[in-house]
Image 1: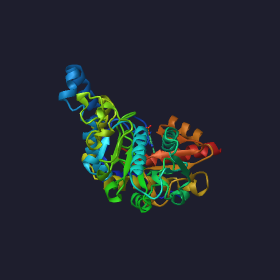
Image 2: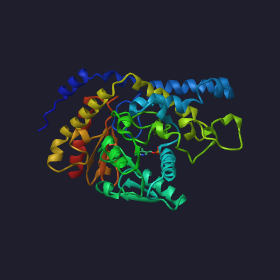
Image 3: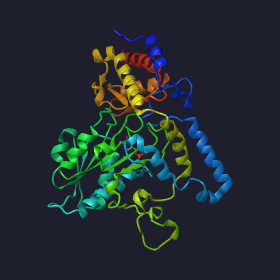
Image 4: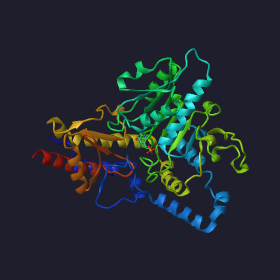
Length: 405
Ligand SMILES: *Cc1c(COP(=O)(O)O)cnc(C)c1O
C-alpha cells in the first residue's frame, strides 16, 4: 500500500519555501533529473556570467587580468562558499580540481607532521576502503613519490583501529558516494585529534545540500567539488579549506608561479603567498569560474536549514513510495533509513541495476548506475518538486517490475 497521494505531493510543493528556486534553473523539458549530485544543471545566472566574461575577453583582452575580477576568483568565490562549509571566509579557496586539492593538502599535512616534534615518526595515512576512489588513488601516487609514506586503506569499521601513533593523517569522504551515509564531522575530527592525527575531509557529495560545520568540528583540511550540488558546470573549479591557524605552516608542493607572494615580480626563488594564496598553482580558468560564480549566487538567498529539511523530505518520500518494492525484496535500500545519517542522495541495489537505469533514462528519469548493481538518485532540493519524486517513483516501480517479468 502506498500511503502518499499525488495530491499530497502537490500540496507539499505549494507549501515549499524553496519552490521559487526552480525558476533559477534552465532545465531540459520532459526530464526528471535525479543526477544533480554528479553534474548539477545550468542556472540562468551561470549562463549570464559566462556571457559577461566572454564579452570582457573580447573587449579587454590582456587588460582583463588587471581591471576585471579575473585574478581574484579563487579568493572571492572561496569567501562566497565559506558559509556553506561553516568556515571563515579566508579559510576557503576555489582552485584546481578536487583530486589535485586532495593531493596538495595531503602533502601539506604530511610535511607539517614531519616538522612537529613527536615521539614517533608519523608516516602513515589512513583512509576508507570502498569509497570514492580518487582519495586512495591520489594517496597511492603520493606514496610512490615519497616512498616512506604508507597508505592504509581499510573498511569503515576498522578506521579507528588503523589510527596509531604512526598516523599523520586521516582522509575521509563525508557522504559516501554510493550509500550517501554521512560521517559525523565533529566526532571523527575529535577522534583523530585525540591521537595527534590531522583530518582531511572530502566534502564533494555534501556541499550545497546540507549544512556543514568545519569550524565547530575544528577540522584541519577539506576539499570538495564545484559541479555537483553547487551546479558550477562540467569540470567546475573545486575548493580547498585549511583552518586558519594551520595556514602559515602549510605549504604547497605544487608551488606554481601564481602561488608566489609576488607573482608579477617574476623572482628566481619561490616565496609562498599569504594565507591560502600559496595553494594557487597556475592561471585561473576564468570562463569555468564564471559559471560557478553565477551558480553560487542562488545560495546567498537560501537558508541551509530549509535546504536540508527539503532534501530529507524528498529522500523520505522516495523511500516511502518505493516501500512495496522494498518490502517484497524487489529492491534493496543501500542508504541509511535513519535520516540523520542520510546525505543528499539515495541508492538501491538490484541485480539488473544497469538495465533498469538505462530504461529509466529512456523514460525521462535520469539517475546514475554505479557498478556492480547500484541505482543512485541525487535529490537536489533546489529544483526538484515533490511531484517529480512521485512521478519518478512510479517509473522506477514499473521498470523494476518489468525486469522481473
Ligand atoms: C565527485 C568526487 C570527486 C571528483 O574529483 P575530481 O577531481 O573533480 O574529478 C572527488 N571526490 C569525491 C568524494 C567525489 O564524489
